[in-house]
Length: 221
Image 1 (cartoon, rainbow, N blue to C red):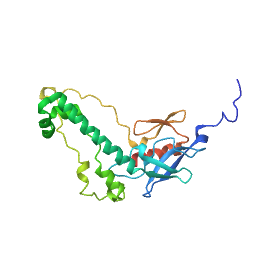
Image 2 (image 1 turned 30 degrees about the vertical axis):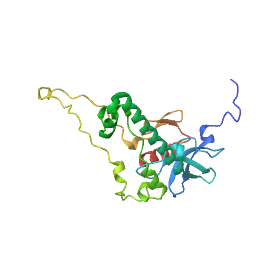
Image 3 (image 1 turned 30 degrees about the horizontal axis):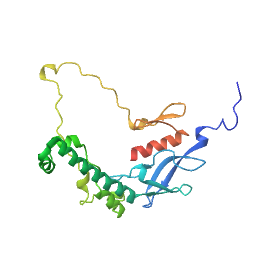
Image 4 (image 1 turned 135 degrees about the vertical axis):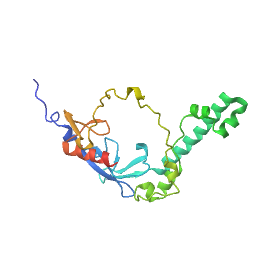
C-alpha cells in the first residue's frame, strides 16, 4: 500500500468549519466555510425568523474574514420587476392564443383556464421594498405583523377532500404508519462523517458539534 502524504491525510474537518455571518441589519446567518478562503461552501441559513428571505443569489459577501454579508435589495427588486413584466407578457400571449377575440375578457375576469395555463405569479415586489426601507417585521426584527404587508402572506385555505373509510369498513384493521422521527433525534450520524438532518438532507460535516449547530439553525429557521 502506498503511504498517504501529509496533504492527503487532511480530513474534511481540517478543510472546513462552521461560521456565523452578520448582515447590514445586524442579523446572523450561519454556513459551512472553507478554512483557507473563509468563503461559505453551503447556503447561508438565517438564525432568525422573518416572513420572507432573499434568495441566495441576492445575498452578497462583503468581507469573508470579517464575516459580513449584505442583502442586495436593489438587484432582488429589479429581478422581480422583470419577472412581473415577463409574466404579464406571457398572460397576454396565452390569452390571445387560446381565447382569440375574447382574450381581454379572459384576462380581466381571471378565467380559470388562463390562470391554469399561466401558472403561479412571481413573488410580490412590495415586501422587498419594505425590507429595503428597513421595515422591522419584514426583517424579522419585530414579531408584530405589519397590517400593510400581511395580505401578501395570507394563504388561501383550500377544502380538504374526505378520504375517511365508509361505515362498512370501520372495523377493518388500520394501516400502520411509518413512525415519525422526533426532531430531537437529529442530526443522525449515518457514517463516514455524513449526518442526516431534519430537512431531509444528508451532508458531510467536519465534526459532530458543527452538525449539531447546523441542525439547531435548521430548527430555528
